[in-house]
Length: 495
Image (cartoon, rainbow, N blue to C red; front, side, top):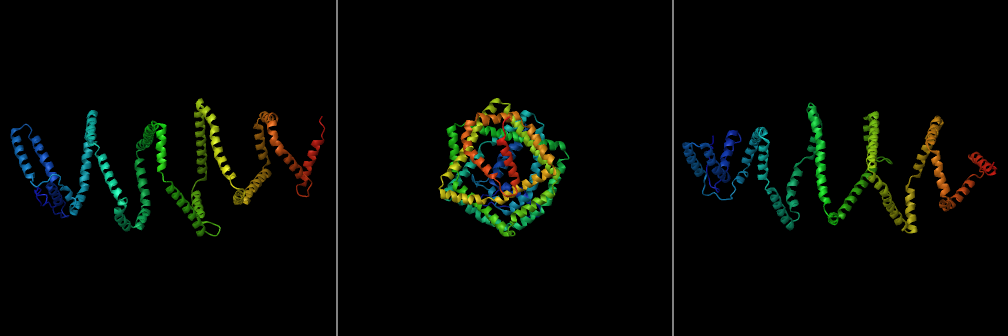
């Protein structure tokens, strides 16, 4: 068993003790002796122990005599003539691997003891008065808020700035060997397998946590109630930050934003976009190469995933949720509109400024059309010749045919439905308002519409007359009836 009495040595002869690794008691004593040998701890004990003896002595004269003699003896024993101011001896302890291993072995017990002490202290502090709590925390924070971390960070920044001015790639170079070894020693296959094998355990862990916490519904409610509080705190922080930003004059604020934009490397952004578009192109090409002729592999995989999801989804619940979301959106739009309309000035300015939004959109469209119009005839014709055939006209026509076929089938099977829909729509339309609008457009605006009508109507009438000419086809019977109706209209005398 080692003696815990500190053995005073010089800084030059300072050595760490022997750690067996078998007897925890011996190792702890070895740690204690080595720590007591360091200059820093000796200086601390020389200051603390005499004060401790004074407190122990109190008002007793014989205790004061003993404490004074003991204190002087301790100071004498702890003093070392070769102690050098600023000479760090504790750091040398942590250069010994055996010392570190022993500390690590003892660390869980130390942490548990420290945690228990903190818990006991916290329970004790709960019972003191509010003023005492405030004074305690004020003293704790004020004495620790000396800006040392800021100074430390500033010093580190200055060090890095000096290094990077001489060697801009310093960190990358010195970290490369360690990072390379880390990559070489890390088995990604084992990591992947570990993550895959942890899936069931992760679900079990989440299930356990939810099972336990839901045994206390009140705590779950309180936990959920933290979300609005956090949202309010975030909103308050954003409000303060934006408020400070709004206090900046317009020219200075604009200058800040422009300086920020000027710092953005447009070339880097362009290269990122170029690389991303190349990735998308490669995925599309690879999908075509991996798939069957005329059928890409990527859509097939997506189709299989979607099919699996849909099969395992309840149709009724899915559509009820979709309808519910649509209703919520409608309610949101209605409430937003009501809130706007309840503020007359807001609604008035919205109505006045809405055309400006339309004008901005039209200016953008006009700019596009102007750029097309500036193209030469051959260039424009070539571009349109490539543009129009790119549309799949046959597919579009098939869609139109399908709509017509479905409409005809519905009318043939249930003609009453179509008639009822048309009747309800026509009955709902205000005929007087419709007639009034027709009179305004075709009567009062006749002079304004005449130039456009003169340009369109003659060709339209001529085309209709040419269309109704007798022709030997399947629509001749219908055309004959139309000619008869038109003839009867033109030859009918007014009563």
